[in-house]
Amino acid sequence: MTEESIPPQLLEARNKIDEVDNKLILLLAERFDLTRQVGELKARSKLSAFDPGREARKLATIRALCKEHELNVELVEGIFSQIMTEVVKNHRRFQGE
Image 1: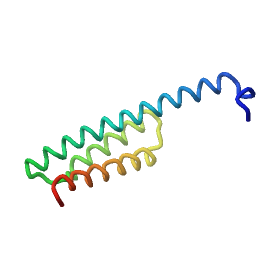
Image 2 (image 1 turned 135 degrees about the vertical axis):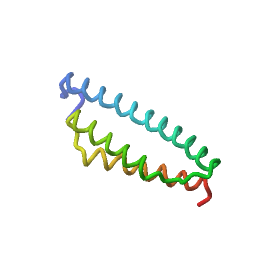
Image 3 (image 1 turned 90 degrees about the horizontal axis):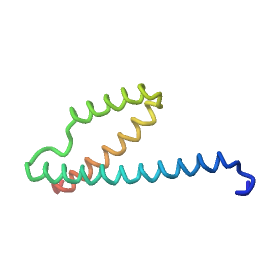
């Protein structure tokens, strides 16, 4: 498919998707910056890198939001589980575990 044969509406939709993807990356970077701060605070306060209660509450909220917005719960929960696993790994690194 050449760019000339693509309907303008499709190009516009793709451009908007690219913009949303860019925003998602920026939001993810912001989230990891905030979790870095949390990890440093936990390390200084000698708190556990992993808070199972917090993670369970967060995933419950995510599941509810997915249902509210008709998103694939398993997909989004899986993405956030991966993000949280990475965060805990980073927090453990701050604590020298």
